[in-house]
Image (cartoon, rainbow, N blue to C red; front, side, top):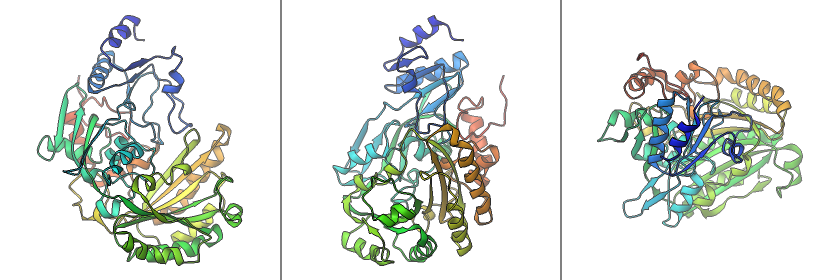
Length: 463
């Protein structure tokens, strides 16, 4: 229990808002993207700036409260909420400062990729990271940062120049290649294990108008479409990042009847480069089949970056599983087709991302804490349904899907796609870097103050 006097004293230290269970906006404040997560923190601090973050960290430490840190609240595992503790909510910290001359952007942690792309578009610039606009810059970057420019410019964390971090003891430190370089290594992939990042400084890139969109085929052609896409990717220029998605489109989308009747397999992509070259690079994808629908066109990058947002609306029950594929073999493709045919919810999707054969792979494996750069494909199964009573068949289907795909997986997983899957899966996200991350945790967070996350546990105990 926290005394009323302690809460009132804490409130006087804040510029932002303190939300308690008795307040009218409490339920709204604890709502996140995944409706499957229903947790009740004792205190929510909607921070207005760095001083509020420091005050919240100090209050939590002194009150011995469990701490969760919220950016955009998009993480499927629900690590931005906790029961009975404190949520340090950064979602109102949305400042973006663009320096077009030096092609950099300074971004606060509550910013989403859509908001960052909007600010950069004025200068015909873009930041690499994010397939979905509602995803937060903070969480995605700290765990990796796959997105629509990954093959051309690498991960979001590969484009970090510096960060400001509030540590477990309430200090504010800067980390970069020249200042606290060990911490800078760790936050680039290690998630929120070492502190709360309150500012990100990114390199950004020219990207005014790009080719973007999707070609759609009936679901009955999934196997042939996946094989064609796989073979096309072997020679695709790195300016082009694409992925494949299997789904049932909502009835209101104006699509050919066969796609509504059968479901569809879509090949989506963004080409960041000269438009004439992009048109040539996309021509084979747009001519194959031919597709039942082709919605590729030139558009501002800020629009391309949000083109898939409708697939992942907030407020639904969600359960994800994923893994890096050693290759996209014919047997793997046939297994994907067979399993998706049994999907219990028409809101669920299966995604195969092609992230490799480009900039991400040119970064030395030891340069950052991000775990796995060698695998070209990533499989993501996102089960989505409306009512809590539908959870059991959807979760079972997802697990069965992953069990069937096990022969095709590397012993590796993207930490940002992890649910609540246990310590071994966290280890799989980092491979042989895990011990180095533990040593860093011992230095910066020996009491595991920041543990509501994909946790890297310290190996030392303190009194």
